[in-house]
Length: 289
Image (cartoon, rainbow, N blue to C red; front, top):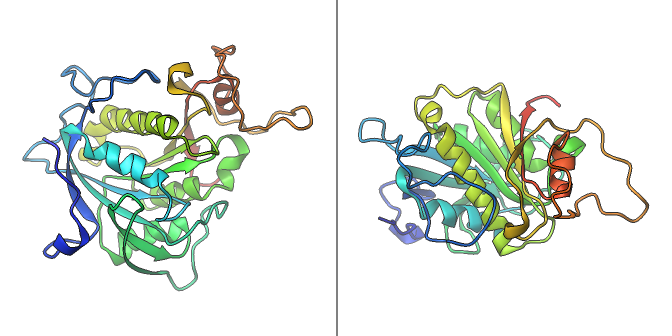
């Protein structure tokens, strides 16, 4: 059963931006990157939430601000879930803070109640993406099983990960011993492409749900998903690869974020090679890079 996101005026007895969501398995039959079916009882992690465990508590942050519609793609995808019980709180910067890495505001950042472009409830933080994590954990007193950062317009692969506010927020979370997932897609917002990224995020949550709900998931690294700038039907399967430590030398004028979408490199050496060939990448990233 899908539960509607709670409007601002109705959130009186609970934290304003916390929304209880039913979870797993949407109705979209469109082609896209390979994912584990959330309705398959054999899927690892599917149905791991119970009355005894309570809901899987998620905090969603980003570096593009509470004003960015890409945030709603992930929120709305989570709202379609039926197999997991999710409790989602959105805490995001008031405006775009891309490229801010893991910077925080000296003395802390202030925050107010807000809504996303899609009408989802949120907290708006007058600060950086990393500040949003600090506000969620310290000021709001949340105890999430997972921090999800994204979906970010623009891939945060290779050496860009160290500059990324999206990854920086996730790095801040694992420093606080909270597991984190960062999700990034093409530089230009494309609904279908970003929905494919949201599907991959949900798959990752399902695959890791058992460890997350028992608070046994590792926090030595964060998981980073980068989605190629391709139509979903052109994407290959997710490639678990290392982060590129050097960016490739490209011909003058060639865009590093462009993807050929020809899947010509079926065994990519790193996340940059995977994404540029049309494969979503899944990479582990350390807190200090």
